[in-house]
Image (cartoon, rainbow, N blue to C red; front, side, top):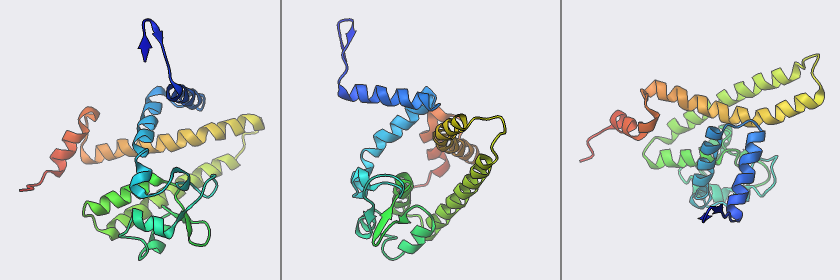
Length: 207
């Protein structure tokens, strides 16, 4: 908000500015931060859609309370409880205690629910999730192998800083590469008109 020539910022503005600064320190570009903030904004409604509170959408290594099977059933009733074991096998949710499940990627859980709601076969979606899981494991193995090959001249603090910063860059970078590759596969050449290109690709007679 601006009053005269002076900008007046509320608490939410200051929180966002602090977050942007910390992301820049970790190596994110402003364009990348914009994408992350957009995803964060969209995710603000995600917890309500899934019926989970923000502190339940966590990985086992993160603070917070995991979700119960009943909560997962509300999120993806076509898979839970009948196919909960299959969902766990894909890595989208992880067992982290008796009747408790951690969700490393709420976005993938939401994508799963949306795709099934749109009419895609649950078996097909599970196969896609398995493919994603295999790709992630391959990336993780390659990065772990690289970390194990410590450069002789590097200092430990330098490598720790690189690995810490690199986790965020790796997460964001692999996502962007996937979007880029998908665009080429399905013929999206104009990022400004993604919706139009997808409409042309998927156009059917709904009448």
